[in-house]
Amino acid sequence: VAPERPTGWDSWRPIYGAGYKQWGWMYSIATAYSSYLGKRPLTRKDSDYSTNVMANWSVDFIRRHRSDTKPYFLEISTYGTHSRTFGRAHQDDPLFPPAYADRPGHTKKYGNCGLVACTRLNVRNLPGFNDDRIDNTPVYPDGTRARPWQPNDLVVNSDLENRRFRNRAQMAQSIDRLIGRVRAAVGPNTYVFLTSDNGFHLGQHRLHLGKSTPYSSDAKVPMVVVGPGVVPGSRSQVVGNVDLAPTFESIAGLTPSSVRAGWSFLPALQDPSAPSSTTRAGSGPGPAV
Image 1 (cartoon, rainbow, N blue to C red):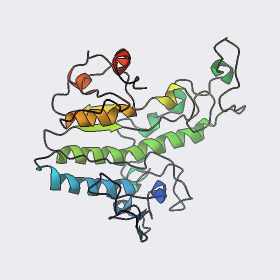
Image 2 (cartoon, rainbow, N blue to C red; image 1 turned 45 degrees about the vertical axis):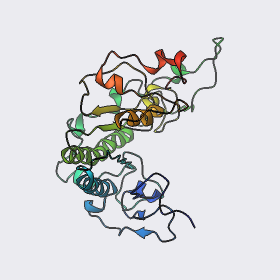
Image 3 (tube, rainbow, N blue to C red; image 1 turned 60 degrees about the vertical axis):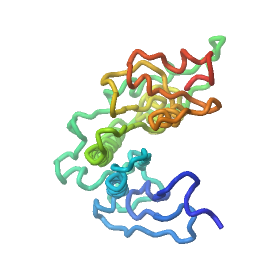
């Protein structure tokens, strides 16, 4: 018999792959392995939008645990700003489906793109947009040219990519509200980390929408941290996802295993000039990235 939840987790509320559509997704409150999966009703209500449901679940969890004597760990993994998969939940859903409140004609004429007006978001302003691919052909160590990354002889449709760019910004607004609710719910002794898994190109280097290339648009992801003792400002240290687990362990007062890949970057949060893992690579495990 499969366990009710993965080892190490006390609470497990997965939303399954149809969550990419944002509505009508499958879920199981008790287990990821259950033979019974609940199905969220397919509505046009933003209260059933998967990011909003995750926000409600998260705030409820925090309120129940923020006074615990032991530290708690909560991971929130939204499907936004990923494109929908497995078709549309609704016929009018774009490839990147925002909540209805953030779409054009609802709270704002051209949609809610956050601090920047949607009409000012333009893919033509992205570094490398529609750049001639010959400028970006990879080369081998000896200087000879290699095959282009995802070659595309067509001029990118900037109008189409603009709509997708703005839809993604509109999707991000529900995530922004989730973060605001989480920050309002946690106590002053709580760390909040914001990061992602990969970047995305929308016409840069004459590549249609996608990822999986080594350009900055695909490889760089956000890393924003707030919490007790975190000194405000940017950092120059190189960190990767493998550094998250040892950092969380350090915050909880544990000593990360010496055989774990990655380093705790808690010192860099407390001191912007602290050395990065890449400068310590000779004294322990390999570099962070």
